[in-house]
Length: 86
Image (cartoon, rainbow, N blue to C red; front, side, top):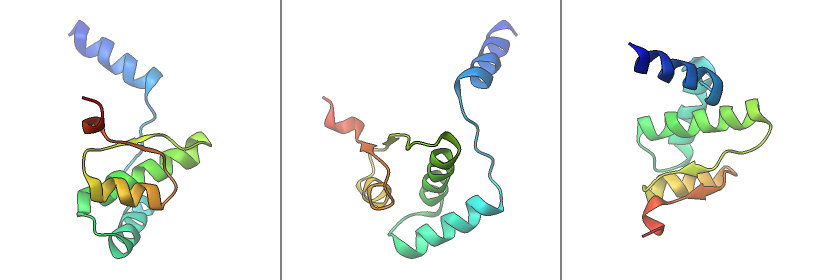
């Protein structure tokens, strides 16, 4: 139980939680229409865009999927591919 409590405290203090709501779904469907993305990838990208709005600065979008990275770059997010760092 202590580990779970420590984890939840860490999440509360260190993470920005983005709720899946209508705005995220609408943004994700726009992203699917504009880019060759899978549905869940579009939801992830839409959530990153919401995080950018909430934080006032763009978070670095990390993915190993080149289509997802291209879409993230196209919408103005800095990106990083973990495979680029051997």
